[in-house]
Every structure is written in structure tokens, then in C-alpha cells.
Image 1 (cartoon, rainbow, N blue to C red):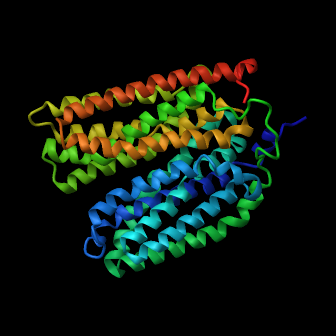
Image 2 (image 1 turned 90 degrees about the horizontal axis):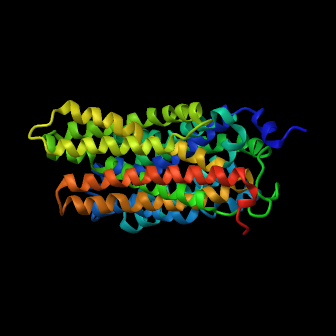
Image 3 (image 1 turned 90 degrees about the vertical axis):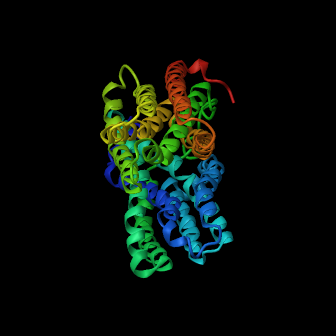
Length: 411
């Protein structure tokens, strides 16, 4: 008899991938819109610098809470239906930004965090069931490209619209576009959700819901990776400005190169992971290369006059690796647990991932203001290496547990 998962894979993955990638991009767009509009908020928002700096941290902190519980509503609304409701919640927060008061931004960050948390658990459940096993890493990596895509769209469209029509109109116009997309998504989402098995429709066997030691190790590696990724994405341009004498525009270009390289690196690592999944995993390799490249960045700090090309070259490599691990991580997590437990386990793992997102920039920012940059970067070298070791241990443990059902712990 044909298994439900194989039957689902015959439905095709292109449309579900497009929907989940767009959901991810919109969620990222919401949170990063405040940074993109920062120059227009200086004269209208009280204590603008503080609020703009705290906004993403608060949103991701809230996402740590909403991600682990998202799977509880899958059976009622469907995974993609849950994502649509999440985007609707985020859209409400985005609309609140037009009020330009500190309390409005506080409420908006909470609503956007509630919206962002469920997006990865929902998409993982859908794409894990619909993607062919030999292309699962690539599909999940392509979906994760929505994160930098959303930031790129926010950074290119919002300032242009705001410069002509003002901050409020830029928010309203883009909000209306997102609302239109959401209306278009809903019917298609319902049809796809009808073919997706949720935990209640397919009862899990005893022990399937357990967040076992392999999952914990993988999640711990994601904490290290997200810590390093966010630290580099926040401060790589600043380091170029301070150490190599870049102008602010040139330092911004370093960050642009980092993010664009991440967009290419995510599907690139997905293809590599699919090619080697029979005998190994790409996830530890990503961390090892990230650690090595960050080590080269440490070497640059000791040079009297590092060349500009060195920073750009490292921005390409670090963007592809430090920002390219996400899709491979979700694919490994999908292989670590039965399909019926994936939504719950992904949510739990992401609560640890988001912890790295929240604390990474704050800790590194404090250290950069207190000690030599080379020492801070050396710490990132070590953290990326630890993440690589945790990833290897997590992949090894998860595959052993999945291959030996008797080892799966009872709930």
C-alpha cells in the first residue's frame, strides 16, 4: 500500500515551497522593517535608537514562546492555515507601527514575534511530507532563503517609498500588498493542508514526541550557529569601518555582500547536503568552515592596513556559511524524529535557536565596546567550532536513535 507521505509527495512541492518561502520572507520583512525605516524615525519616534535596537530582540524573544506551541493548532487550522493566521497577526503589528509611539512599537514587536515563531514549524511539517527525500535539504534551504529575501525587500522598497510619500504611507502601502497576498494564499493553503498529516490525524507511537538527546544536541548547535550568524551580520560592517577605514557606504556594502551570499549559500548547502546525505551531513561542515573563516577575520585585525578585497572576500565566505546553515539544520531535524512529531520538535528546537538570535548581538556588542575586537572574534571562532562538534554529535545520535527504535525513550 502506498504510504501517505509518498502520496503527498506526488502532489508536487513547487506551490507549497512558494507559499512557505513567501511566509518566511513576510515574517522577516515585518521584523526588519523597523531597521530599514530607521532614518525616517529619528525625528518622529522618541528614543528612536534605543527602540530600533531593542525591537528585533523583543520580537525574537516572543518568537521563542510562540514557536514551541504552534503545532497545537495544526489540526484545527492546518499548518499553512496556521502560517496565514500568523502573518495576519504580524500584519496587525505592522499596522500599529504607523502610530510612531514607543508603546506602539512595543506592541508591534510582540505581535510580530507571535507571528514569526510558528512559521518554521509549519513549513517544516508541510515540506517534509511533500519534498522528495533526495531533495529535502535543498527544498528546506530554499524556503529558508526567504529570511534574507524579506530583509532585502524591506531594505530596498521601504526607504524608497518613504522618501517620496513618508513613513506612514510606506507602511500602509506595503501592508496592503501583504494583505492582498494573504487573501490569495488562503484558498490554496486550505487545499494543500487537506493532504498534510497532523499529529492528531496520524496518532504518534509511544515515544515519538520525545525531544531526545539528538534533537537537543542539534538544537544546541543551532544556538551556536545563530549566535555567530547574528553577531557577524550586525557587526561585520562596523569591523570593516573600524579596522580597514571603510566609509559608512562601503561598510554597508560589506553587509550587503554578506546577506546576498547567504541567500545563495542556503540552497547551495542544501544541494551539498542532499549529495552527501547517504554517508554524512553538511551541518558540521558548515560550522567548521565558519570557524575557519572567522579565524581569518581575526588575522585581519592584526594587520596594519588590511586590503578592502579581504573583507569583501570574507563577507562572501562568511555569508555563505555563517548564514547558510538554516535549511540543512531543519532537514537534519526532520530526519531525527518521526513525521508526526516534527511540528512539536521543531518548535522546541527553535526556542533554543532564537535564544542565540536574542543574546548574540547584545553580548558581542557589549564585548566590542569593552575589549579588543580580536578577542571577541576569537570567541566566535570557538563558538562556531563548538557548534560544529554539537552538530556532528546530534546527527550521529539522531540517526542511531531512529535506526534503533528500542532506544527511543518513553515519554
